[in-house]
Image (cartoon, rainbow over all chains, first blue to last red; front, top):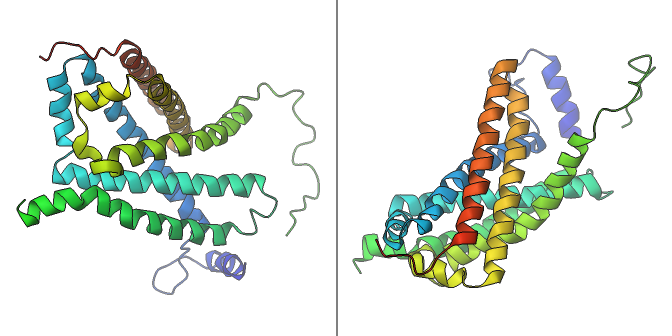
Length: 143
Length: 136
């Protein structure tokens, strides 16, 4: 609460990085920015993903060929990014709904943000491991 | 903190609201979002993490899944909800950031055309999937 009060004072002065008066936003604002970015990225991926899956109507070999690219190291890493983006969007979406519909939601919005970041890390650590383990062992383990 | 206004900002309200479209859109984002949490996170978990993840996916894997009406229905619901949820989100983003009316109009036209294309193609593929399609 005191954060937002001091932020209001800061923007009243002329914003600059040097004298420490630049408005850096509230975590709630950055959560909204991240929600937009992850949503837009996921939407563009969905467009590509429906097109590549549509190759099952062309031929099994055409589909198998495109899906092989999903198994290459670079695309595999991008998949981890996609899962991270979708997971954040899902968790923050739940938080937005709690802010909207739960009477105490607005009061706990910041605590809920730290909570979803914690859940995100707890899920992404094993998630990234299972997604990358085969790629990494093939690259560095030689089998 | 309460926000007090000394007087109404405009002397009278518009006679009637023209439409509740934005309210419906706001509500849709929350309802579809709840469903998508289950559908999409389930999809990502099965396809990317469970049992070898992406490395076991090929045509035969897809054929095996879509032999079940359950997964056909799962994927069809996910396609429609995700495309409309994402399209509506991007519509909001375009409305927020496009500066000229003509830019806004054409960006949204491109968006709507892509949504129709993806929904039609995706539904067509799910409904007409043929596991015995010739190999080449």
